[in-house]
Length: 305
Image (cartoon, rainbow, N blue to C red):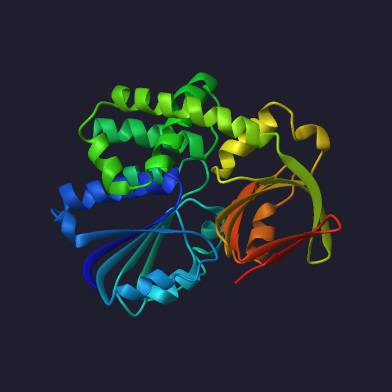
């Protein structure tokens, strides 16, 4: 398959909103036809086998994400790769990483990747900005306005990740008002929040060894986005009383593909743990993909690809 532009975005709400902003920029600022733009959702520790279908790409954009393995899969298919990110793991290597085809733009954790992209591309669109701000606020967990955080940002995150299609979301955002979509999102999140709350009570304690370091882990299994489960579980003290070092959430996407999210509960640098298993992220929140998770005698064994 020969295409002009490929947008690889992290498979979460921030990544989706980042893709929407880039899509708007290419269509309206660069006058690129929509049929020349393709999207791929990416996660850490993937083998990216689905990229084999692309033979030649004019330009690649990697949004809210960075992985050298992804670069290696794309470097012979294109002459230009631009990375836009806000993860600490990317910021750490930004000035050390050198590749003739790759340009990295990265900010810190104070804003979401979608807001960083909106700003750096100098997009000017009222509706896009409202959604960008809401998703960015959720992604960096800015609770300075707790009412806005839970009544706008939370429902929109659920809405985005349920639809999970940049073009569909772009069409909605550019055809309906912010208030109309937010009302739809609130209806959707009312049902989802009830389900998430039940899952957030379904936890167990186990232990993980990484480089001879032992961690007490509160484990959560569900098919729900990890940050939502984590937020409810910790907000109501369900997990806090157990005093774990970290929280691990396992989302079984396929029989041999598990998305693992890690959250710090005692100052542990979970980015180091994620990197050990081929992932990335932030000091307080990170993730990776596993082939299998084995629980035996309260010990967690993680098999990666």
